[in-house]
Length: 315
Image (cartoon, rainbow, N blue to C red; front, side, top):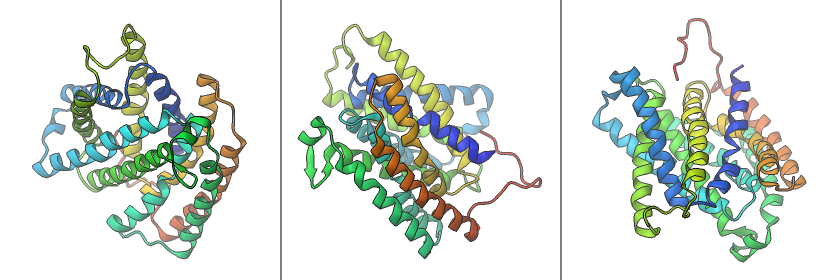
């Protein structure tokens, strides 16, 4: 059942790329990041203030961890993601973002001493080969922003977002695993830090008159941002935090390889983007790597099943 919930989580989460492209027609990437994250933190921390005030008893070390998490997983991740998604299809943006297993494997090795055996390396190698067809295929706008070889600046921005995101999630796992820190508190605080930093950044680079939102479009902008906030910041972020207590960051990132399929469907439905056979083919190749790594982690004992003696997880 837990694996099914993770797949469902990614099915919902993958629609963020389509909704972000809609929101970016009204505002800028940096302001969208700041406004959305501060709004989300107000909802999460407001709930904790009413329902569980004891969660606010945190140490100075935890506050520092929240700030670091906010910088990597919120501020840096979303600014790079939203800037890149302006020039890519929702499906391609999501696919590149799904490269996170490569970074997750590296960071899990550093922080949790999770061993990378030959079977895992083979799985990662197959996954890397599967990304090449998608990276080679570029649209007209992306070709104008080509960096080198078949890498464009928007693609590199999405890769940077994936790297920052995974490092942030590894930090979150360090916070919630074997500790009293709740995912709600960790997420709410990090969103406040990251969102505030993004708003400060926006103040210096965007045109505030009075805010960097297209004139007469604040209503639609607020509605799409609120929808993104509830679906992704409140629901998905915190469900992901709960899943980190049960599964490794590497496995969760690999399960995210189903996201490009969902993103293709969302892009087709909400944006009228054509379905790409390249995305489906490359995702199928990545899924082969997923199964190899998944089976290796089962044998290594990094993935465990809940037993009756274990306490139920709280969101």
